[in-house]
Length: 294
Image 1 (cartoon, one colour):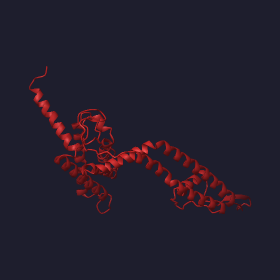
Image 2 (image 1 turned 30 degrees about the vertical axis):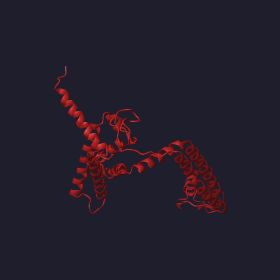
Image 3 (image 1 turned 120 degrees about the vertical axis):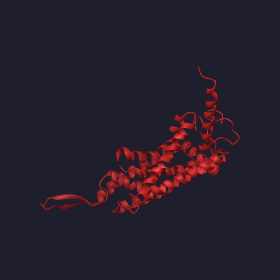
Image 4 (image 1 turned 180 degrees about the horizontal axis):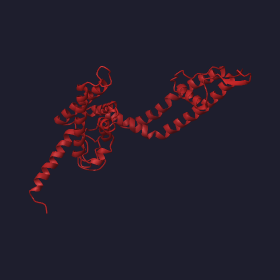
């Protein structure tokens, strides 16, 4: 049976967890804003240290090593506090930000376990800088990002169809270019022993090589490492380049149409302590995703 004296300590513990959650996950309070701004500064500093660690003049410097471990320890404590202060840690751990926060501290620990230099991957911490939108109350940036993500998701069927058509085009044109170049640039030559052999002098040694050329040509990248040499091949290349220019605007139209249908809503930086969801209305009292009180 529980002692009645335990309840005050439990309530104090719960109040402490709520206070930690308010500071870490919210930017509406002075302490929350100070914490997030300090965190951003630490993230930028850690990314700079990670970059300097790969510069020959700074490699194996003791202060670089110490600074790297300091930031790793700092972000580890922060990650554990985030798990501690939420009601359902599993929701945070497997959320997008939870995974990013975990990946930002793993490289240095892998360095101990496997002995390989994985520290360069600590630059993944830079993804956490995206929190700047909510920290400086640039809610409309986050709203625009949500609108764009939602528009892309709603237009996914059209985009899949578009990409399928593009894949068919590059496969057909890549194969056609391989056949054209092989036909025009395959010549008969006499070998050293007097036999006649066929030599393909084109850059297209296989159909996958032709498909690769079609992709970089249609996307107007044009690396130039594989180019057609025959007149029909050059003509086909010109057609594919013009087709690529005309197709670039197609997915943009899909997404733009979906964005126009969405409405901009004012959002708050508050985070639900149960499901870790953000994007609530400014006057919301309950989470619109799990119905828990905010």
